[in-house]
Amino acid sequence: MKIATSIGYWSAGPPSGAADLFAAADRLRLDQVWTAEAYGSDAWTPLAWWGSRTSHVRLGTAVSQLSARPPATLAMTAMTMDHLSGGRVILGIGTSNPQVVEGWYGQPYPRPLERTREYIDILRAVIARGEPLRYDGRHYKLPFPGGTGLGKPLRSILHPYRTEIPIYLGAEGPRNVALAAEVADGWNVIFFSPAMNDFYAAALAEGFSRPGARHTSATFDVVGGPLGIVVDDDLERAADRVRPSLALYIGGMGTRGVNFHHEVFARMGYEAEARAIEDFYLAGDKKSAIAAVPTRMVEDVALIGPWAKIVDEIQLWKQTILTTFSITGDLGQLDRVVDLLRA
Image (cartoon, rainbow, N blue to C red; front, side):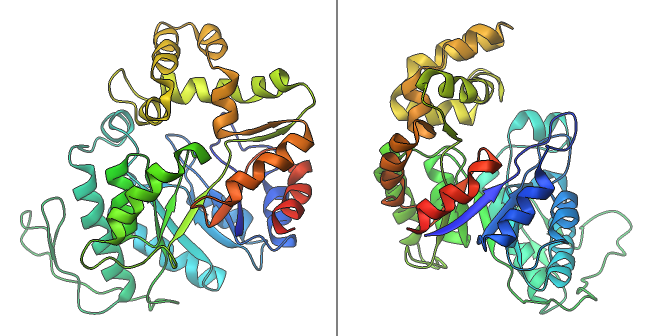
């Protein structure tokens, strides 16, 4: 199993210890390190800034939001970074949600799977640098069929370091997971639980079985891991470290009826609990929303508690569809967890 780590989202400023995390990832010869974006910091600038101090680890975005950049712009960014890093870029993309896409970027959200498919088509065409770029899709048309009428098919003046850069898709629902298996090179999982392994394996198998699928389960990379690894002899205190994040995602990342993270936990069997968390959160009672996150939910998606318990439970994670185990949590535990995974 490969090993990755991530610095996650920024809040009011850069996350503390990010530079040290990149350095540790390179020192430990981890396979991947990932950055993220929502509607504050972008994913690419930190990846370039901290990634410039690395020599080995692959550098990925989890995820670069589709609506933030036209596909040609994202392809240009990835090609540039691929040259600067000596071919270590992983192009992780995702659609985000309607609140961000329409509220922040001012772009339409409907038909996200179809839009993703077209976006990836264009990314690959730009990066391959074959014929001058033409595309006639439902969402993207190149050249633009209006305006001055002077638009012409173009081809990148930058020759690619690699004619194919791996594209990973951030996905949560089964249809989007199947799309990742069909058209992408990897899947970035945000909330994984070993209890849901068979559900996701079936979604991936659906994608692999489609005509023209790029991969099989043997060559496709599934990147995921626990939401956090919190070593503490007091289980409830450890769970308290994770509850605020879960409450935010389940209750506040979207609106009632359109929250993809909420749906993940409903499918996991926590429909009533997720509804209670959402009710509190949308009513402005964040304290009660956090308190409503049950410990067993935390244990499903995170590794918490005494070290012996984590050592035992991590074996379940190693036996799942995950091919790259993503470590998030205390930087001070990174060496220890890496040794455990490599044992």
